[in-house]
Image 1 (tube, rainbow, N blue to C red):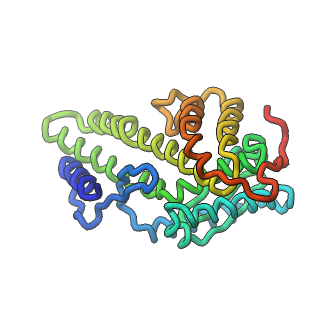
Image 2 (cartoon, rainbow, N blue to C red; image 1 turned 180 degrees about the vertical axis):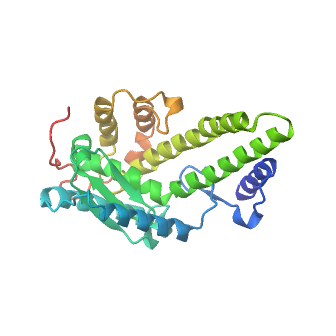
Image 3 (cartoon, rainbow, N blue to C red; image 1 turned 90 degrees about the vertical axis):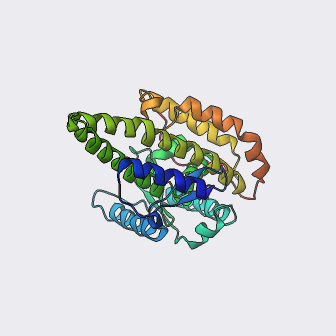
Length: 286
């Protein structure tokens, strides 16, 4: 599979007229979905960039870190279980190499959480009403951690590099045929964006939903809560763009996909002691 993907990339680069050596091109295969992934960036560089980005966020004077045990302790408890699940998953080798860090950002207006390459995790308190409980937070963190483990960031950057090369190649080719280069560049950019980058991004999101569901279940959290998370997200995220113009699948699409994967997730689910479904501190959803 790697050989096939490499040949496909080389053919595309040749069409674009790019002088990129074969030694810089490569593919990886997702161990869960068996999808081929284009990777033009070394893992070490990706981890370094993740650490730099994480430090920038934490040292931003506008960012306030939570020290409230009611907010920090459940996040760290859930993250620890997800990390342990990752270390015994099909991503065990990369998960064990990460230097994991977990931070809680006090921002009740931001519904967000992220996990950067290298295992740098941050959760905004604004996501608590959507997560509602620790099982819901596990679904969210399983999703975010999967992005880091599956190297989706490096893949997106690789796709961007390739797409940029395609636009450059199209522009040069148009100029040689007497076509206005600016028109060709605009058309090529739209084609690369809507026909290549956005669809792949939706694949990343669906992949993270799926693998994150399995990680949460493996960590001892009821995977059914993932469906409720997206139901609550749909409630507060009105007016999202049409799915074909979005980097994320529609909420309804995500819910249907998760429901179709639930039997497999339940095979990973073994409840652990403690209170994995404990409620998170939160304000009512609006």
